[in-house]
Length: 109
Image (cartoon, rainbow, N blue to C red):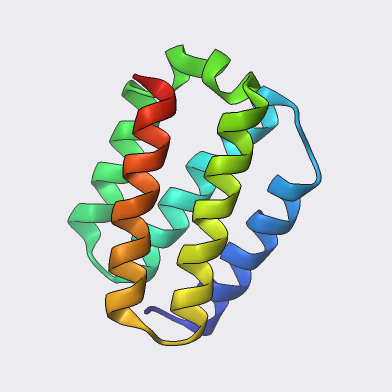
């Protein structure tokens, strides 16, 4: 995992996500979470991909961020990912990322 500041940034984003139910704000925080996570990987291609996805695919689906169930599923997944990273559990973080994608996908499609 990248620098300690990345973990601090992810934890700050989680705190903000837990304090709002506003769909537009949650969309921004979700994008910020994924871009910070990608930046922390140190993989410039992954970071660029995260930015491109955020710019091109997700903005039209803003309404998905208004769904309270989806908000809670996303926040829970993000917390699990950060917990694994905090514990330096690489395999756990990978597994949580895969599970998060599957859970969110089931609420979007």
